Image (cartoon, rainbow, N blue to C red; front, side):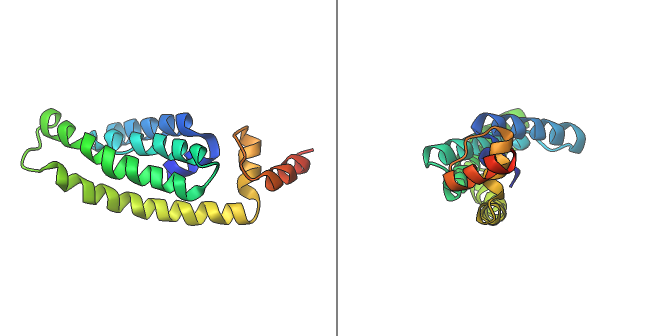
Length: 148
């Protein structure tokens, strides 16, 4: 949810930074294994990239998160957990279903949330106010006029 919303509001680089900082906080304060980083950073970045490449389609931001976290993040987590953490006995296929399941839940919530913001014009207003690229031009004009 946070990765996708950050990607749509601010873009791929800020989303990557946000995912990295949240992962570090989770590892240090909550004792989460390095999966907090390997599972999040790819999805966060690809969410923003897919959103921008699609010209502002929220579904593409969700698909970028699902592919980045659910597939790439899961595959990157296997060697980290096996060789660095020492958790043996699990194959790479163990991580993919659980990562995809988690990202589908968060992605669905983010999709509903962002579509609601788009319907009432707040998504463009937030993007405009944050200085991000706004893809909904009619809502962007309203947002620019409302800040004057």
